[in-house]
Image (cartoon, rainbow, N blue to C red; front, side, top):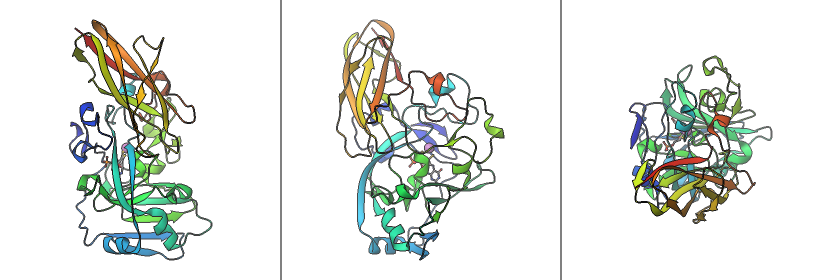
Length: 353
Ligand SMILES: Nc1nc2c(c(=O)[nH]1)N[C@H]1C(S)=C(S)[C@@H](COP(=O)(O)O)O[C@H]1N2
Ligand SMILES: [Mo]
């Protein structure tokens, strides 16, 4: 793992650890934390469901399992800061980790549907949003507070949104949110709140620091230190994105035909429909072969063969989604002060010998 920060723990795997795996092994799944990992006892953990509901309720792990049917969903999580390093190359982004291309991963999540829990509580007709609150207190926030965020009620009710206690058939690891986390497929990773202890139905988005003041797209000329709650645009749906998984960036290889693979992902209810690869700086493109679509909420891996020339060269990749959106060419055009959503064309340096 490349460890960006030891405490709070922030780390991403080498590209090779994601290559060839539709489901990411738990030990290769990136970790993104804003506070020390809280030690929660599954036997005493509770989840409060409150706000604009008819029947506020407190659930235990046992009562959730007993009351609601279990469901599984294969879904990709992608951090809004994935590929930030490409933006840092354009202009420095102080105080934010320079994530490479592997702050994204896919797991099979098992738990209960958030929609079933909301239905049981009885949602007020005026409600518009559902807020989640974790148990981890972040000193990064102003003022220090538990990590939280919200999603629109219409998304929270969708069958793919889970209160999950299992990842790839194993109980959630502490660093990934044990005993229970939210999984909001198609939304930035930040909305999949770990160590969830409260679900609040409301008539506005959460005022938690991580919803109101960060994970927002600011115009390039704004100083993030002077930006206040509500400034910029709240990030939600993941924009179409892609990167290389093999060979590694900077790899030295024998010149000649070389297999090249990567991932591509689009959030919301969009899926990846095409990936192009170029060896001539984008003058011409060849379509890569797309791998399986394991679920509507999962990435697709792609593969192709590139003719590696002698010397140093750059290979490009770009994905299209089912709304015909294409990744932008240039990282400078998407640069923003907090370094989110770098979905510019993927660039891989290879050296042919
Ligand atoms: N409680 C809590 N939930 C959280 C976070 C956090 O710091 N605290 N980080 C979020 C972010 S920004 C991302 S990208 C994902 C990462 O999940 P992972 O660490 O399991 O990969 O968790 C989200 N949920
Ligand atoms: Mo994130």
